[in-house]
Length: 338
Image (cartoon, rainbow, N blue to C red; front, side, top):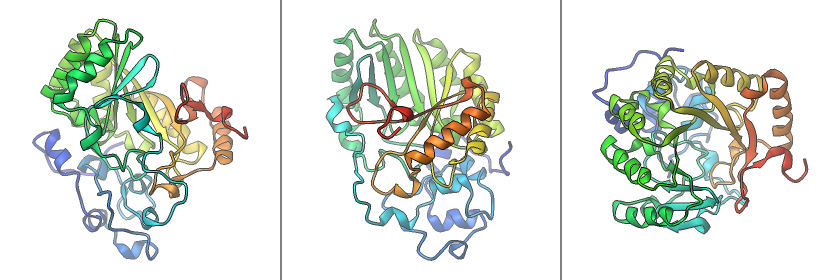
């Protein structure tokens, strides 16, 4: 899949800076206007619109229901009263072991490496996060690394955010080196939306960094629809595969975006063609402002059953919900009422 023509950008960081865009400018770029949406559907968001030029180039012009547009366009539903919705839906504050360090699971530690992200997904479970208080800082890094070094059960460190690939190469290299210096850590995992949004982020410097570490490297990308996997994205993934990076994808089941078995199957096949395996299909978290993306569990179970009939087992993502305090992700089939 090719994007429609884009201007040349000097580097990936310029594309990241160009991600901030007003709703009016985004719609104008796509040949749309407020008249293309029902009255009251658009909003002036407290959570700013953020979508890099490459991602915007994949949105179908003139289509107000485009599945990629739905993920980034601020809508009036975000401001409606939503009983039971939370600003910290996964209770992450309960799992902070040190500044910037989360310990949810026994053998893994997660570092909030950055507060920046390539895209502001409207359903993001950290959309209300105060990164100034929760992000790993240079001053707090020694404390976090000491906590990891003190627990020999930790064999995998996860870099999350925000998005760790929003960090400059030099800062990311320093962080990877600090992790690799802990002898009992064997695996580095990066969770990233940037791979789909700014494929130029896979620079020669990034390739050298990941190829040069002693750690096994896993990248879990975040893509929800086959239309996000452009030829440029596939080429970037190919560069990562060539150095032995394990590539997985996690999606979120989103109403109006991918809540259809045929769409999920097409996405899985496109991921596989690009060298990436589907990993998780998350049910939405109860984050304030995102209730309009929810797919109820009964319908999700029906979709999962249909997907299993369309795909070989190795391409079926695991349908899960993250339940605070549980030892692992909870399969959809194990939730109450299944």
